[in-house]
Length: 92
Image 1 (cartoon, rainbow, N blue to C red):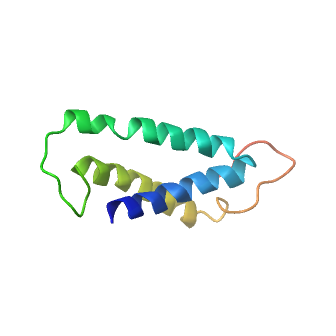
Image 2 (cartoon, one colour):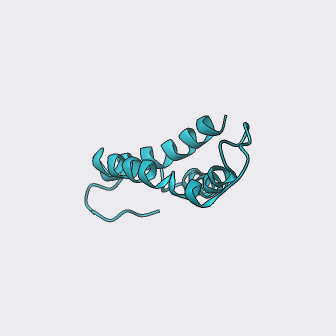
Image 3 (tube, rainbow, N blue to C red):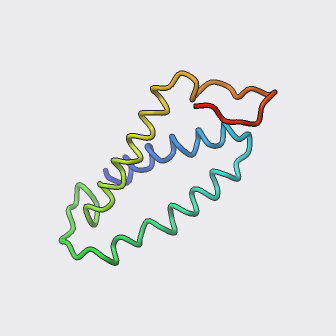
């Protein structure tokens, strides 16, 4: 359940990055960075696995930040609008 939740939340952000940039490469780099960094907190935590939350509470804590970001993207009316072709800046 934790992996499904995290995938949906981070997928929302990576999808937004792809739509706003017009390229898949920022999402590819973001996905690689998330994969590379996600295991680092497990080196510092010695906890019993919680089957509902994942192997450690660090994944749950990290998903809270991603959840707030995804809610912010859906809350902002400009976030999901098509980017303006005249400017290169990203407005949120």
